[in-house]
Length: 159
Image 1: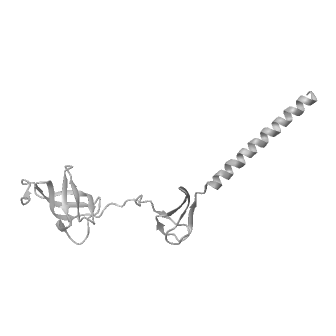
Image 2: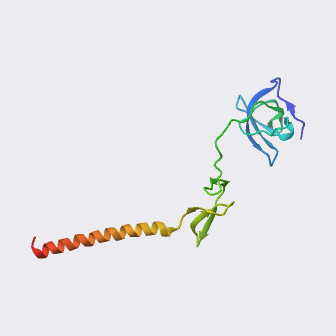
């Protein structure tokens, strides 16, 4: 593998962090022209780790695999973003953000529990919905029986 060779006199460029994995220690920057540049955490100057959306300045170069970035300087913090959609919910008992534990019985979700305090977050038992549905059917059936009784009385009385 050959040593990285600088891209002809483009000098330093600015861009933003497109993606960075702390576990892998590498990621991608995208410059203002839309070109992706691979970089490693060792190329970052300073003590802060890059995060998605941070504005950076870097020295572009390339190797056999494509464009790379070296001497990466973080210019601005990452833009504020809403909480990630990671499946966490706030427990109304302990106020912690947790991934709920789902309690399943015979393949049917019964309820979810807070993994921190153990309190119930939601009840999915089909009995509740089934009870509401059955009571509505009984009510409709009783109305049908009442209407049939009225019709029979009307017929018998000749009215």
